[in-house]
Length: 393
Image (cartoon, rainbow, N blue to C red; front, side, top):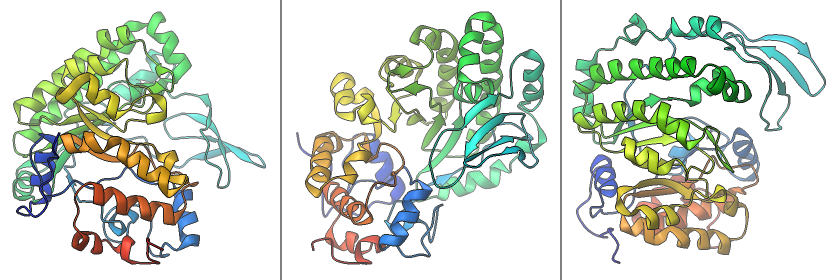
């Protein structure tokens, strides 16, 4: 199998390159995207050589810009709560290593202190029944004033853009999980399935109305969502329930996107997504991201099983970056043929954790760019590769 990369060919814009790569067409070099970094990772890297002025975020001065990540533009569509719950977080109890807090939406949780990364212990979720749901539903009016945008002016910007243009269509089920809680939602699926379906349908209506308003004017290349509804052992909702309740709504949204020329559609879901992949593909969501390899969501296996009907993002095992250079090279080599086939943007399968040394990450970036056909001249323009000791040392 030959690679889609054609070194020395005419230079493409970022937008042209993204579209061609995701449609299995030849490119001058691969798209360079990454998933992000833990705050603790940046703190460690500052001690190991990362300039202090380089911080989290996007744009100039960010870690992504420092390492040459290719730019993109996201249209400001509003499909969440409007208005969002506002106000300060109340500290209900302050302990030595944690504190119990109440968030503006009514959630009460115990959160850790200090630099330790941990998931909060949820004590009370914002929604426990229909009365609580009413507080949220009134903020999910598809036509609320806060969703108004000057789509004509924004559309002009999108048509002129030389970088990929995307939009975020949010969640169908993950947001509900955050509002109800995993255990409570699992019971609600049996005790009050009509309420769960009403929640999913309400979110869908917001998406459909806002997407029509946006896409009538804007030229969009990709659409992305968020779910995070899978563990290492698979999805938290049975595939049968997902197919019955969620998939039809995903299809309606994907149909609208495709009617307006958007045919690259992914959602962010960690864990083992394999039981949901055929359902998502049937519903029109054709790109999987971020592909956590240790959970079984391997881009190599997924491409082998589904061929070119599936698009891929991520799939480089982040834990390998904390090991030796040989391990990092082996991980890149593992996905190389999938990249060469097209329809795949390789990057870490989640945010880079704090056990990854700064020099390991510099080495990883250089070798990834080399694998994707970047020239030495292009790599020399990446500040993170030229700022610091030689990677060859």
